[in-house]
Length: 145
Image 1 (cartoon, one colour):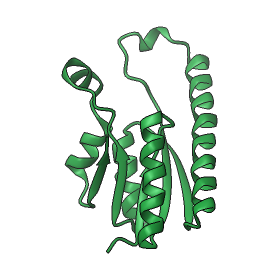
Image 2: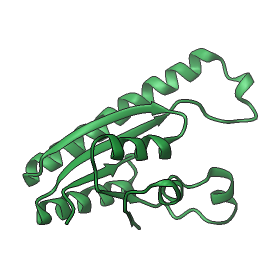
Image 3: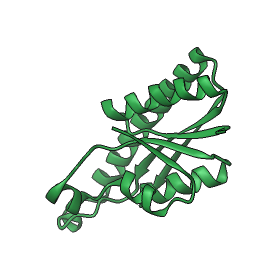
């Protein structure tokens, strides 16, 4: 049924569990995977004007290094499981849009991703990448929680 699965990761424990289970699912159905980690380009904040550009650049550099390590771990786990895998790292303002675009561009027919389960004010203020992917994707999405 599914031949190519997109596995977004942000390095969190829940995201790692979704990746681990996604790899096992892919193995079971003989699908290949694409792992993606999206580093937010800008952080919307009322204090944004007070944060010097050098600190923002340093934060992006540190997040990019972490993203590369998350993707390397995903790639290693896929290889151990015998699942064909490629990885993508993006720096974008809207992570959900980058996830959907990567799924479409790579010909994925399923997205498996974690939901961090924010509710109430946290969901209202921070939004939910998983919710936005669910709302905007034409590709089926399996949310791991």
